[in-house]
Structure formats: structure tokens, C-alpha cells
Image (tube, helix red, strand yellow):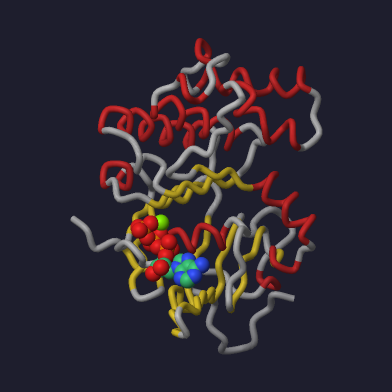
Length: 254
Ligand SMILES: Nc1ncnc2c1ncn2[C@@H]1O[C@H](COP(=O)(O)OP(=O)(O)OP(=O)(O)O)[C@@H](O)[C@H]1O
Ligand SMILES: [Mg+2]
């Protein structure tokens, strides 16, 4: 297995194709989109938003994804996080096709492996910052004391120790987004997917969240994909790509 026939070229792309290429030693990409296509049908018209897109999320690497409004950035994030199914192609997690999992297994995989941060924080207004950030642990069946014990240091790390009893309505936009970041981290994911995490913040808060985001990716050796229009945040990532005509290409911005 894995041997090449005489004359056959070694794989030159960092995009990994067949599962057979990868070993069982942790060398498999954490997350991979292979020939992913997404077609929406709206008003009787077929819209091909992603067109045989390839992407490999490498361990400990961060990538910004840019692109015009409507180019398919959010669509890509949903597919990578198993929140929506591609029309064609596969999303692989450590070599395993995530859409071959049962709904239950998929939900379990998502909770364990993927941390999501969205433009809108989606915090629950009746719960405190601590409860909101601990929610994935509580939903996984962990007892309150243990869940809060794991969550408090993360809230402290995002600078919110003194706000943990506050409900979202009593937090600033930047603080709300920092709670959402803490919530994305409590399960200890290896992959962080963020869709315009600073899109809803003023400059000062955006800047603070950008810096925090970059620091956390490094500290926790996370693989991160960040959709952003914020060029400063994009430049903090290891690589900058953009979606153009349904595929990824190196960002053409300055
Ligand atoms: N459920 C759906 N049904 C039909 N069309 C959809 C659906 N979801 C998304 N689209 C279309 O797919 C295209 C890509 O949408 P997407 O939300 O991925 O764009 P985006 O790059 O994230 O844009 P933005 O920068 O504005 O957030 C858009 O033209 C959108 O209208
Ligand atoms: Mg979007």
C-alpha cells in the first residue's frame, strides 16, 4: 500500500487525495475538502457556489479565507464543520469522510473536533458568561462543577474572569465575542473555524479580538480557518486565500 508504480510521479500537491495515501500515525490532515462542490437551487436556477474546491487544513497552521460577498465563504465553513452537506466531493477528518457518519456520530465529531466562532455570537441571553462558555461541556453531559472548573481558566485567558456572572446583555460586543471564543475552545478542539469573528465589532474591539484570536491559535497549536474582510486579521494568519469562481486561490489583495 502506498507504493508507486514505476514511472508514476510522487504526489506534488499538498492537497491529499485518496485516504490510502495517509498513514495511521497522525500524519493525516486534520481536515480536508476534496473536490467539494456546492450547488444551490433558487428560483428554478442552479447556482454553483463551490466548484470542485480542494483545501487541506494542516496541523497548527492558520489560514484566512477572503472573497467577495456571496463568493461562498460561509458555505465553505458550513461544509468543513459538517453543518451542511456538499453536492459533490468529500470532507475528510483525519482521513475519514465526515458525511459517511450517522447524524449522531457527526454531531459528536463536530462537538469534539471543531470550534466554531460566528459573526454573531449566538450566546443565550438567559445564561451567564460562564454558563454560556461552559454550554458545550454541559450539553455533553458533564456535571456543572467539572464543566465550570474547565471553563473558568479559559474565561480568564480571554480576559473575562470578572465578567463571568454577567449575562450577554450586560457585556460589550467585544466581551460577548470573547465569551463565544471561550465557548469554542472548552471542548479542546484541534480545528477552529471562524466566520467573520470581528465583522460585527467596532475597530477597538475588533483589534482586541484579532490579537486574542491569533494568540490562542499559537498557544493552543490550533489549526484555524478564518473568514474575514479584515485585512489586519487576515495578515496575522499563516496563509491568505480567497474564493474565486468556486475555488480557492492565493489572495490577490495587497
Ligand atoms: N440555502 C441557500 N439557498 C440558495 N442559495 C444560497 C443558500 N445559501 C447560500 N446561498 C447563496 O450562495 C452564495 C454564497 O453564500 P455565502 O453565504 O457562502 O457567501 P459569503 O461568501 O459568505 O458572503 P458574505 O461575505 O456576504 O458573508 C450566495 O449567492 C447565496 O445567496
Ligand atoms: Mg458569509
